[in-house]
Length: 135
Image (cartoon, rainbow, N blue to C red; front, side, top):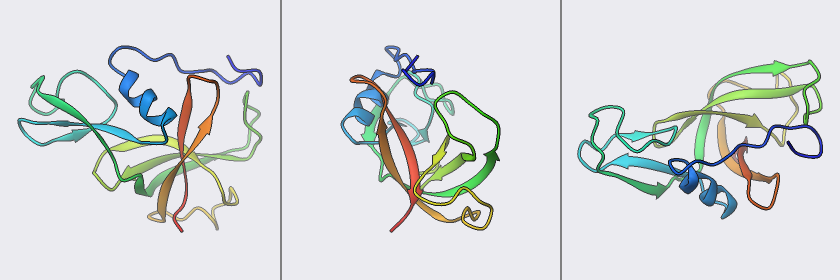
């Protein structure tokens, strides 16, 4: 846990490339070199065809707000209200994240609004991808 009580993710061999990318300021995804499917979360095989012929690449970091909820309850490491969002990346996969850099209100958080990745350093080893309104 971090000093503010937030749970810190623990990288595994299958996810290490993702966390290394975030630390370097890159959002890294995987792509199957057999069928071309781009996917998240990280895993050693393609969820579409089962192939283990996968590669890691740096995503654009652009996406759109697919869905969200505004949490008003206390939570370690966060000051309410804060958005918990599903972001649909330009490359196709969806991931859960937080929206930062704008009011945490339904008026500011519009479905389909363009977003771009930003990074929050939690520890020397863990940096979290988050999203903000695109400029």
